[in-house]
Length: 289
Length: 286
Picture 1 (cartoon, one colour):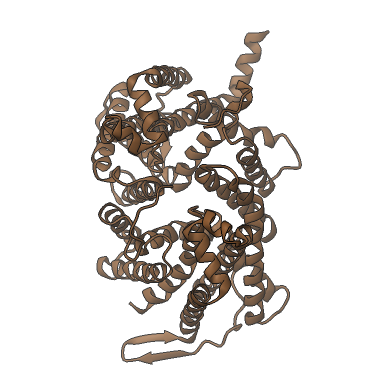
Picture 2: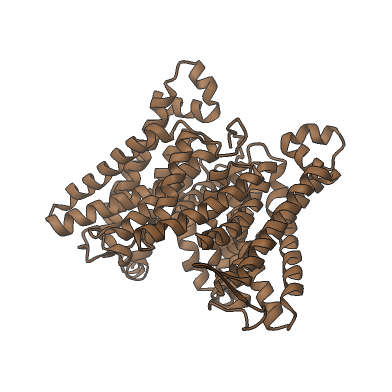
C-alpha cells in the first residue's frame, strides 16, 4: 500500500509535465519520457563522475532538463505553431525529438543499467507496527509533493502563472492582451521538462537503476495517469498518479503475481475513457485534437 | 544480365523487400482510419490479433494458410467492431488514448495467455508467405482503397475528417462511417499481421506494442496522407533507411538512431504534407 503511494507520487510528478503542456498547447509531448531519462542520467553522472552531492546534482540536473525543454520547444514545436491543424505534426515531431534524445542518451551513457553510488543518501529505516518506511521514500514523496505545490502556487498567484493560464484558455486572446505568447509557451516547456527530469531522478533513486530506455515504461503510465486525472488538470495528475501507483501495488498484492499489474490499470483506463472521457477532475468539455 | 542482378539483389535484400511490403500494408491500415479523421493507435494490436489468430490456427489446428489469414483478419475486424461501438464516440486525442489502452490490454493478454506462448512468443509458425503473396495483397489493397476513395463512402470519410458536425448536418451517418473506417483498418491490419506471422517463424507480444503503433503513424505522416501512395512511400523509405545508413561508416550504433530522428524531424518541419508532395510537385493546403 505504502509503496504504491511512493511510486504513485513519482508518476504524478512525471504526469504533471505532460498535463501542463497538453493544457496549454493541446499537444501530447512524447519526448517527455526522454527528458525524464536524460534528467535521471545527468544527475547520476554529476554524482558519480563529477563527485557532487546529490542535492546539488539534483538541482543542476533539473536545470538541465529545463533547458532541454527550451530546446524542444525551439526545434520541434515553435516552427509548427504557425501552421493550422498542426497537432498531429506536433505529436510526430515530439517523437522525432524523443528518438534524438534517446540516441544521445545511448551514445553518451551507454546501454547499460547504471546505479547511484552507495551511501549518497543516509537511508534510515523506520518501522511502525507492520509498516516499514525508509527515509529515502519519505524524501521522494516530500520532494514530489513540494514541487507539485510550488507549481500550483506559481500558476495560481504569480503574474507569469496567470499568463500561462491565459494562454491555455485562448492563445489568440492572450496575444491580443499583450502577453508574450511564445515566451510563455517556451517557459511552460521548460517547467514541464524540469519536472519530468526531477521525476527521472527520483525514479532512479527509488529503484536504484537507470537505463537509456527507462522512459519507455513510464511513458504509457504517464499518459494513463493524465487521462485518469483529467487532461490538463494538475491536481488530477497528482491524484491520478497516486491512484495508478496504488492500483499497481494492490493488483500485485491481490493476485500474487505481477503479470496482471498493467492489464488492470489499462482496463480501468479504457473504461474511464468510455464512461467519462474528461477524467476524474477534467474540464467539462472534451477538446478535439 | 538483369535477371542475374535481380536474383542477386533479392538474395541479399529479400527479407527487406518483404518487410517493406508488410509495413506498407500496415501503414495503409492506419491510412483508412485516418482518412475518416480517426486517429487510432490500436492498429498494431489488430495486427497482433490477426498474427496470433492465424499462427495458432495454422500450428495447432492445421488450418490451410488462406483460411487462417482470413480468420485472423476476420477476428480483428469483429473485435474492432465491438471495441468501436463504445470507443468511437470519443474524439481526437482521446480516441488515440483509448485505442492505445486497448492495444496495451491486447499486448498484456498475449504475454499472459498460454495459447499465445507468453512473453517468449509463438514459435515455429510454418513459413508460407512469399513475396508474391505480400505484394499481391498490397496491390489488391491499394486498388480497393483507390476505388473506395472515389466512392460515396470515400467522400463521406473525407467529409467526416474535415468537419464531423458539418458532415452530420449533411445527413451523413457519421457513426456508421467511423465504425466502417475503423473496422476496415483493423481488417487490413489483421491480414498484414497474419501474413507476417507466416513469414517470420516467430511472433512476440512486444512487436505489436506502443512503439509499433507509433511507427505506423510515422509512416503515414512522413509519406503523407493525401494519397494512397503516401503511406506506402513512408513505409518504403523508413524501412529501407536503416539499411541504407548501414553503408555509411560514420553512422554506427546510436548515431544511426539519431539520424532517423533528425530525418523525421526535417520532414515534419519542412514537408507538412509528407514526402509524397515532392512527387506531385505541389504542396496543397489540406
